[in-house]
Length: 151
Ligand SMILES: [Zn+2]
Ligand SMILES: [Zn+2]
Image 1 (cartoon, rainbow, N blue to C red):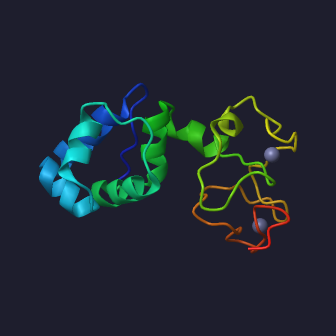
Image 2 (image 1 turned 30 degrees about the horizontal axis):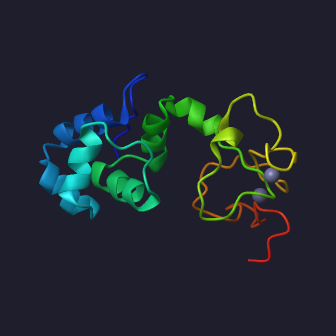
């Protein structure tokens, strides 16, 4: 996988377009590879798509050969480094399988705006930094990220 993060200030539309051109794919080819409609790619590259649905993000990341976090960063207009340390969740309010609330990701945010709980950016048990919310458990020690989770 080639490391090709979004440039600072690069919009999601331009980023996807740049990667696609880099790979020499047409919009149709990219759509097929990502399992999406060609209209979705067109809409995205015209800058009409704000947030990416999980399925879209996964498909695109796969087809473009970049980590999902790169697309998420381009989406939010922040650099990749910022996403890495900004991945924070409220252990009470975060639902596994759902993206984190925008308010939690604010670099200055320390507490949940919903319940006041301290936000967490690492595993409570082994302190490994949370790098992906694809998993509901810490990959290192198996502790659930969401406290009191019965799932
Ligand atoms: Zn909360
Ligand atoms: Zn852990």
